[in-house]
Length: 96
Image 1 (cartoon, rainbow, N blue to C red):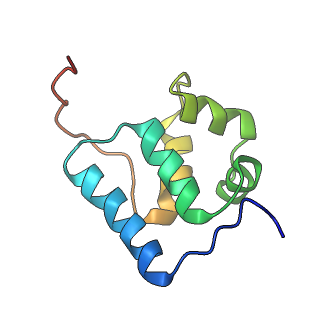
Image 2 (cartoon, rainbow, N blue to C red):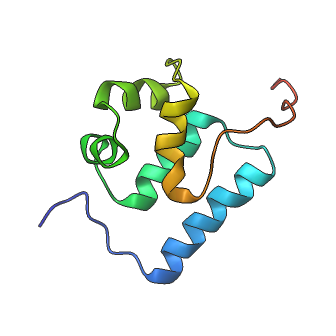
């Protein structure tokens, strides 16, 4: 059995989705962490998630590492499956 496949209930999947949407609504998650959580929710490896979203694995890894400079189009490809799109939001206070 594939070790990356974890048994989760439907309720646990919904809880992860709620966690993502609440963090986004509260502006308490950065893009790298949000994409990591989206990948986790999807239960896909990085190459599988990248292929599913129509981007390169290298682009996904750059986004997840926080070192990439993706285009709006690329970000929308990644987040679109979750009913999200790029928008303007207030800045978060600087972390101390």
